[in-house]
Length: 259
Image (cartoon, rainbow, N blue to C red):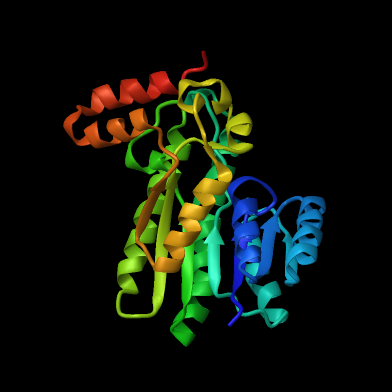
């Protein structure tokens, strides 16, 4: 049976790759982003190439009303969402006290509140029919505090713990919640956040490879999947339990300092 996936942040990067992967498998889509023009272009591309149906909803998820408006629009169109992929998010580099407060509050709204609200709205339907999959895009940043990206790292820690918790709450159902934790990935994120000039983004994974890892893990119902780490980053992740918090904080700050 054809599955329908709803994907936020679908106009570029990992979200766009999720949309392409799902379309290649013959699934219909509901794609969400701020740019209606980019969504229209993607809709035409995917419908032409794969003979599927793509619904576009142009919404800014930093608006607290957007998640409910998206859910209501989907419901009014009689679309049954099978896969909810909460991918939209952004970061920002700089000392917390020197950053624009509203920008960081918008980050919390998008990375945490919108993801939570969309999960709640669509999970009601999943539970009612005892079927559905959620894929939340977190980050390897969720493992540790992030000096110079204090708010971003904190939002991703929320996404990881929230995803894991509700996955266990649903242990006796046919519904799964998968948490994708990418490392540095070649998307617009780096340039928008200012991370493109830091050591952390010297080597990046492709958005396609990260999306494939996340999508496949979602299909299998995996709890967590880490994707896109370099060998040195993998070694560092394994060393974290043996390092003092102060040394971790210094290392992360150095990696995120603009050279």
